[in-house]
Length: 120
Length: 328
Image (cartoon, rainbow over all chains, first blue to last red; front, side):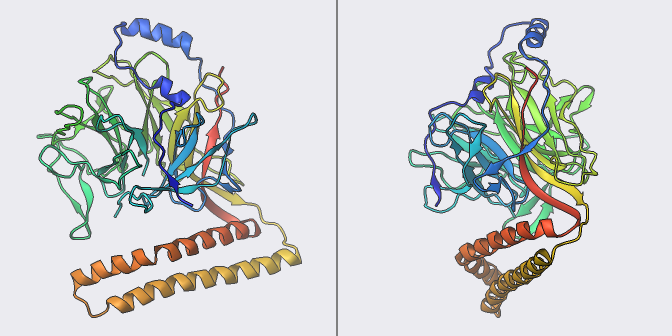
């Protein structure tokens, strides 16, 4: 079943970090604040993400994920593009455990067809 | 193709901007009812925005051009396969950053219009880093915009192609000021892969990152699509496994035969038409058979996924990986 696009009103946590372009501080002051505001990133070993019962992105060429709340429930769904210009959506499953997403479904355009970016 | 959700036309609705392998940026406009099908983003003169190499949809050939190169600059031939909209110069409208997967360079296409009335310049301007053009190590897959260090300025996160197994994710901190970004030296968030794994342990090539605090602990995690390479250790199969592997191979051959049959049938139907008519007819016929071809593709993927653990040696597959930030 294709997923209709829902107008997104709920901002993701990540969008809080998207730049405000107004900043009057000096670079030195910013650097100093940044050092205290953001500890060094230390990443755990990567874990393959599942979309429903399948690994996310499997069987596609160059999957490109992006977090986006597509259904307005305040949770970060994952939208996945690929080399051929197809887009799928894996909806975040609500719950207290580790983040989990449902199976990928194609994103549908207003013409009722799959949204498809031209390629070659 | 790496989607960016952004209100590109300033109408209060989110659109999707993406570069594709055709060499140009596209936009799918958001409407009250959903997204329109994507279209090319054009410059102020109505021309396609490009770097150098591009797919010409009319001639159906790869072509090159220098019409968008800055005058007097010697620029290596590039292909713009990623794009993000961002107000680089702080004048209130979205400019475009175009990523060149061939060289790892990033180009700015300035918007000289205003929100809702874009007028993109006809020339690409290479982003600088240090004393020369910014070049992403291992070439460039895609860019993401994020205020990584929370200083109020947008930083750049880039995923690289890698030369076989050397893909990584790099952070370029913005050390400039609003409307005049200056990008620092790259910091590897995901270091280049060294390969040599016996199972898929990480994305090694073709890394497409995104950034968000996905676990809600206050720091930024990474979600990364990419191809893993590994070499599985051989072991002896049981009798049942051997039989199942044989069945799966036979089923894969059947699927491949069905795919070929679809293409042969299409070829037969366009035979005798002149070149242009044949091209259009072929597109139409393949589109009508799209659901069948997709179904066969999915079936093939499922069979292959079951067969993979029963075969040994060099392997590769695409996955999406979560890198949880435990830095505090």
